Length: 175
Image 1 (cartoon, helix red, strand yellow):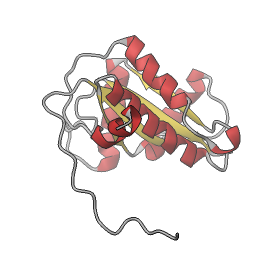
Image 2 (image 1 turned 180 degrees about the vertical axis):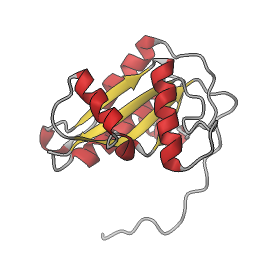
Image 3 (image 1 turned 90 degrees about the horizontal axis):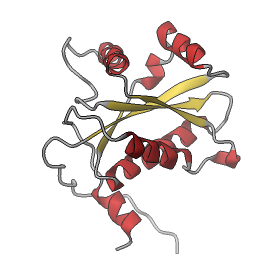
């Protein structure tokens, strides 16, 4: 089996991470893979905000927890030390789709480097909040962006879960 298809079949969402930060070189490779995702009309309508600062990561985790309605102390990022936030351009008709493809590339790249990842939602709601709109301004991000998702990233604490059986009846052919 081809290595890329093998990675697609083996990659799993991880819900328990070690606290150690992955190497910057690995994070940079993962980000680069995300930037090479397919995108509509070549407009590259998605961007990535890499958060490796613990205080900023914890603040984002708390905002995500509140939006999700969980009790204080719950970490919706499952202890992952690095968070890659993907945003899509509201001015690009394919921004949401482009961002979704970026997320897929990020997770596959993480897996290929021996790291775990999981797609965590609620980025849309976070980046509608004044504090995260302000963060975009502080970063010098212009235009209209909306949150697509978070790629929570780190070393797997334990074993990766086994794949669930694939559901039948999801492929139809016209031959």
